[in-house]
Amino acid sequence: MTKTAKQIAALVSIVLVFALFNGCMYLLLTGRLSNNFSDTSQSKQIDVAKFLPHVPESDLARINSSLKLTDNLPKLDGAAALVPVYAAIVDNVYPKGSVTFDGGVFEDSNYYGENFAEDSAMQYKNTVRGYQAVVDGTTDILFCAGPSEEQKQYAKDKGVELVYVPIGLEGFVFFVNENNPVDNLTVEQIRKIYACEYTNWKEVGGANRIINPVTRLEGSGSQTTFESFMGDYEIGRKSPLAITGASIGFSFRYYMDGIVENDAVKMLSLNGVYPSAENIQNRSYPIVAQFYAIYRADNDNENVPVLIDWLLSEEGQTLIEETGYVRIN
Image (cartoon, rainbow, N blue to C red; front, side, top):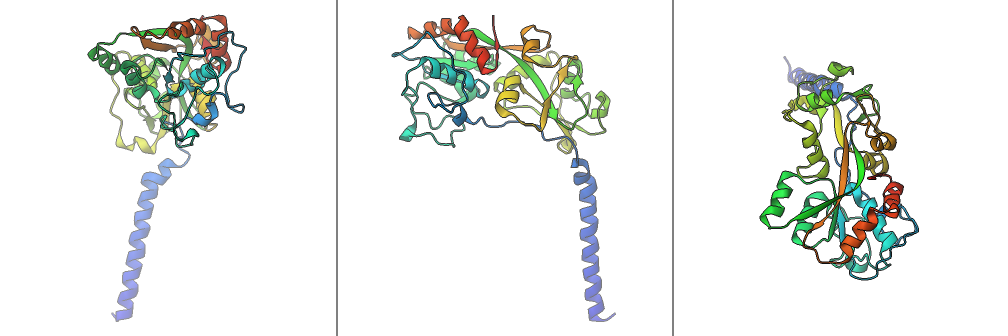
């Protein structure tokens, strides 16, 4: 064989190897991923700029509040899902100038509250760091879901007693890609999916796709609520191939419907009941969670109980409702 023929044969061999490799990758990954209904949102950052108090264009609920605080302002912090609630409290009850930023201006890099100045009445540390802040005394009132065992232990280790005041209701929801044909699951099916007893959507009336059950950050409000929801079921170890399948995730209703607003996902009905505000209020939806205003029992700021009482009044509950959540009473 001539030298030229050998070179041509070598090139043909290389092309065949690459073609075979690409074919295998298509069968293994690309083919599985095409139309696999996996565009669920595991963790989207909230756009804090949309909820800044005392900014006319902010997306905040506004009422005619009879309570106006002028001094000894309790410092407010909370979970991402509840930023619209406590930002609206500041907007309706606190004076202008009570929210301040390092450098004097707000920047879009504020993923975890970095831009709020230390003396600002509004902070944003999210759930995990927010629980630490209220225990450590750098936050007066924290707006969050119930604590994890680790967060309870942190307060106990610090010798701090926390007071939990329920101020609103919210539905805990599961969601999938909008193209997933599954619209409804039972509570038992959800638990078995996350226990990895069901691993393919066809087992629960869906397409022949692997199920990718997505969880959240340990200690976050949604993860803590999810672990409580699982009851006696243990969270299973999913297959490494699950990432090629169709995802299911979880969060709180208003965070998905009012904050993230991702049209590519849909919330599932559970036991045949859709998580609407009405079904959360009448408790026909099977997973209804309370969210709380949380403060230290030894906090001596006289305006902390004043603000808590106002939140439980008709005005405060109207603000909760106008924000998009469900009133507690």
